[in-house]
Length: 572
Image (tube, rainbow, N blue to C red; front, side, top):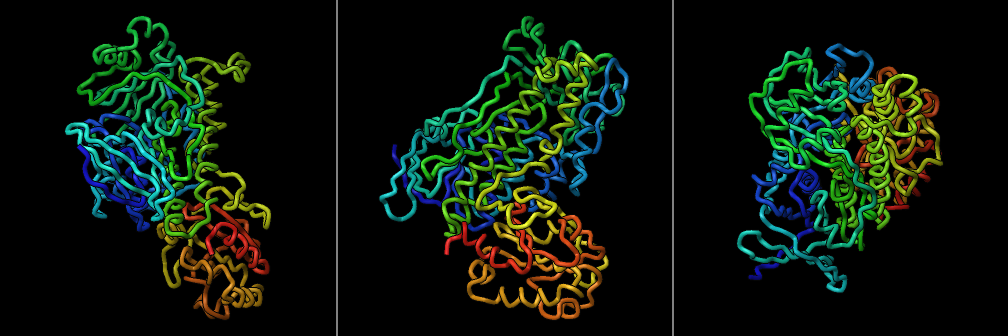
C-alpha cells in the first residue's frame, strides 16, 4: 500500500547514536529532519554496545549541551590498572591514555552504555517536536535535480509490519545505518579493507570479583589463553568483560559460543582472580573487520556517517567516538549549506576530512587488534623479542594516544584550514585549545568552550596583545571591520566576535581605547595568548570553526586576508 509523501531538509536512515546525534544537532541549527530506523526501538537497542567516550568527544557533546545529562548517568574513569599473573604491572596498559588527556578539562573517559547515550540524544531531538520512525526500512531512493524546489532526493520507506509505503522528499540523504548500511548498498559504494581472523567476546553484567581496584574504570589482564582481557566499569551497577576467542577456543566452541560457555571462559580469563556472575545483560562474539567506504559523499546529495562509512574493532574504543566526530563535523556543514551560507566545497570537505581520519583509525586498529589478540605486528617483532609481547601493546598505545583520545585528530589543508598566512603555535586544522578567560569584573574564570558554543557559528577571536603597544593597530582594525566589504559585515550572520584582553582591564574603553570586537574577556596572565602562541607585542586574529577546530590566523594589519579566507568558501 502506497501512502503519503512528506518533505524534510534531511532524511537520516538509522536511529542509532550517530543518526540521533546528527538529527539533534541539525534541529539546534533550525534544519528539519526525519529519522527512520528499520528495527523497533526495543530491538534496535540490542544492537551496538559502545561504552567509552574520550575527552574530545565529551568536549563536542558538551558544546551541544548534552554532556551534563550524560554525566548524570555514566561512570567517570580517571585511572586504569594492569595485571599479569595476579600482580600489578606499572606503566603498562590503558593508563597510558590518561597522559594524553591533559590538554582537556575532561581528563577522564566517560563509560556509558550506548542505549543510555541514545536515550539522551533521542529525548533532546524529540524536544524539538520530532519523532523517530521505528520499524521503517528504506527500500530505495532516486535523485532528480529537475524538480526545482531543492528537494532532489525521493526516499521510499516501508513499514516492516504493515508493508505500508511512504515517500519522503528531502534535500540530503544520510546513511547512519551501521556496518550493513542499506544506503551504502543502494548507492553501490564499496567498502575497502579486510576481515581478520580475530574473534572477541564482550559480556556486560553484574559481577563480583576479588580483583583489586575493580572500580578503576578500565583494567587490563595480560593472559596467555584469552589475550589481553578487558574489564570496564560501566554505568549503573554493570561492568564489561572482554576477551579473545583464541584459535584454540574457537576450535572448541566454533562460531556460536553460547552464553553459558562465554560465562565459563570469562571465569577462566579472570584467573587468578575470582569471578562471580550475578547477571548477564548482553553478550556478543564478533569477528573483526577493518574497512572504510570508498566514498562518504555521493552524487552531491547522499552522505555516510558512523559505521556506515567505517568498521573496526572495539580494541581502542573508537566506534562511538568516531561517530560523534562524524556527526558534529557533518552537522554544521550540512546546516550551513542548506541555509545557503556555503559554497559546495564546504560540504565536500566532510569526506575530505573524515575519510582520511577513518583510514588512519583503521591503520591503528590493525596494530591494536593484533596485539590485543596476542599476535605481534611485523614492525614490532624486534621490540617483542627484546622485551615482551605485552610491551608491544604499550608502545602502540603510547604512539597513538593523542589520536585515540581525540585531542590529536587534525584535518588537512583546505579552504577551511589555511596554514600559510601566519605560523602560530597551534596548526590550522587542529583542535583549538580550550583556555580559561574571565568576564569583566568576575572573580571566577570561564572556559572558552562555554563562551563560543552557539550552534553552527564561527568564532573570531581578537587577541589584543599588550594594549599599551597595540592600541593603534586595534584602532585600524576597528576601522577595517567597519567597512561594508569586511568579513564582519558580509558574513556577520554566521560568526561571533570575541575580544581577549590580557592583564586586568577596568573597562573596555580603558583597555582598548574604543569598543570591543564583540564581547570582551580578560586573559589575566597572558595564559590564553601563550597557549595560542600569540606574541604579546602584536596580538592576532584567530578564526575557530563551528566544531572548535582552528581554521585561520592573521596579524591585525592583514585583516583583509581574513576577508579573503571567508570569501573562499562562503556564499556572497
